[in-house]
Length: 88
Image 1 (cartoon, rainbow, N blue to C red):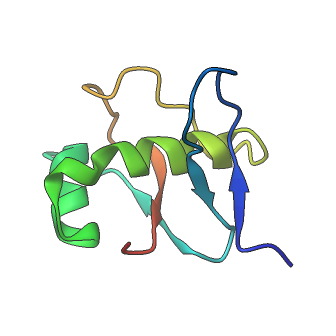
Image 2: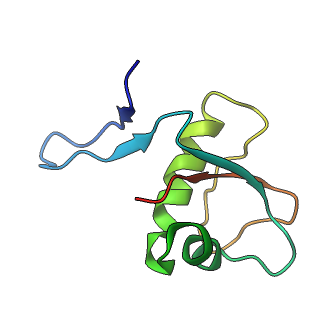
């Protein structure tokens, strides 16, 4: 079983972005006052790692309808289900 799936990247992009495997993290339901950066600080140890939550949640949303794609990282909704990847 693979431990990561690679997202599609442009042909001229020299790096690949790993997407956490299904067992690598936890579901989280957004509460009032939550921000992606505060969740990243709490669960990943660094507020600057919030894009990992966006990527992981969007990857989950592609295969699990209980997750909603995050199209604007500055706006998450109370009750929205996110995927918090394991701490890097």
